[in-house]
Image (cartoon, rainbow, N blue to C red):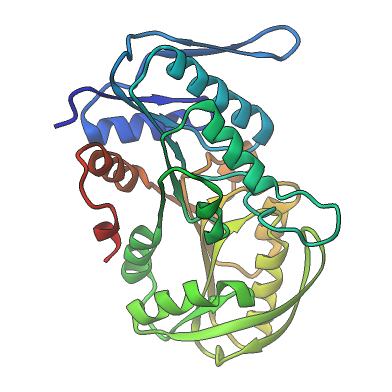
Length: 313
């Protein structure tokens, strides 16, 4: 079923690569990554890929620039080895927040990254819960933006049942929160938030009823956790009895872990698109769900030219 297909993983998330390969019943492709003394990345592909379909799994998570450059070099090595097709699987797409010009003389870095990936030899891109859906249009090759929703919904149904309200931490996430609320037969609330600067936010008002309810804050990523923890405090002040958060990408940079530990959050449920850093691994509030089966099934369907969208019906 998966003959003539290989999956290579970069160094950003090796455990996820192994899990996906186990689902597919194949061995991870042989690849070695090393550094020269000045920090340059050296890649060696350890097996023949001529005329074959190859998938490369690499999240462009911290250290973002190193992981992005490693991905580009892996693709270049495969392209020069006469690989037939190269599908790039980027569970977390770095630079996705820079998807438009917010002021004069600013870059659109998400578009630049798309150009780099295409120029390096990708024939298809798979990503998960892109921060901005329009990033798909930055590529002139097929893009599959898949969703962690089935995994997160399954967890919520099994562990959070009574008097449920799904909370969007800002206006931009309302569509996602509404879709979850509909599937869970839950009510919906929205945090009215004003952002003063990058990674700095302040929760202002709550639109919707949360008093006496189990609140689930839903977002695509948690970076410094400022938005998340302020939302949790606002919910607590408005009478929410239990407060959980669910997100796909646990970036968790800077003061994120301390903020989460000091906040009213009872739990933070994340996917393993990004491996947890050492501090995050020690945080008892963080629960990690695996996306390996979902990614593996997506890879299998792409290889067999089957529908991917039916996974999310």
